[in-house]
Image (cartoon, rainbow, N blue to C red; front, side, top):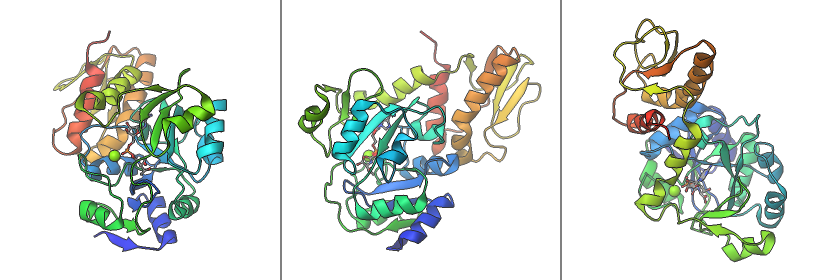
Length: 321
Ligand code: TXA
Ligand code: MG
């Protein structure tokens, strides 16, 4: 059952308890979850029915909180001073001590951070006291919601609550600006114009709009692969395992591996998604230390979140350049 509420404290309590809560921002409603909680973040992908683990934007009450989790340079600080709170998202390198779940950033070493201006979002983020990961609160492939009623129509029964905050003023999503390398690149046009950004930091390059066409949509998962591929080779659909392999298990673990990370003993796909990136990382590090030659992966079903998990595993196993 999904509750429609105006109670910000109750919404904050649900988020801190790992539940999913949609909330208003000045752009569109977001489908929020505690960004530091792998299970909550996996639940966001599940509730949206997202076929891929596209990286999510993390929401903060102010620039100080946001910049504690990423490496902000002078350009980022100047933009924050000008446009935050407001509809600008900045992609920056993660701080080494960033507590945000790897799954929220889809395994990338960058993180998209945003400080929304909507007073209800502001009050909620302050009350939660943790970063809130939130894509737009629509089912995958549908139009972004700009009212609580839209969200109820899309997600009722899939999330704990919708925080009512009226109609969104901006109505298109935030502009997404990549500042993670030397040049600034506009990844998505949105609430803050290119001209306004360029007036602060000078020339900005453009990527094809990420959401415009199938090919650019693949940009993030593609990047993600080259950023994330583990050092050890990956062998999929393992039905046996040798003593020089590290095992990524699902369900009953195959016997005989040097070391094992079980995605989910009880074959729960949401738990598996939540444990995927951390598990690959751990098997890679520990496996390398113990002299393993590869990571073997037990098969997972293709249904539900399994499609996204298998997509990531297939990319991790793809031949290296
Ligand atoms: O206005 C908004 O931005 C809304 C509200 C809820 O804040 N959120 C939103 O999220 O539109 P979503 O998930 O629908 O779009 C996030 C965009 C995607 O295009 C994603 O690929 C990009 O931001 N993105 C997120 N993290 C990224 C990263 N680390 N590197 C590159 N692109 C990233
Ligand atoms: Mg969206």
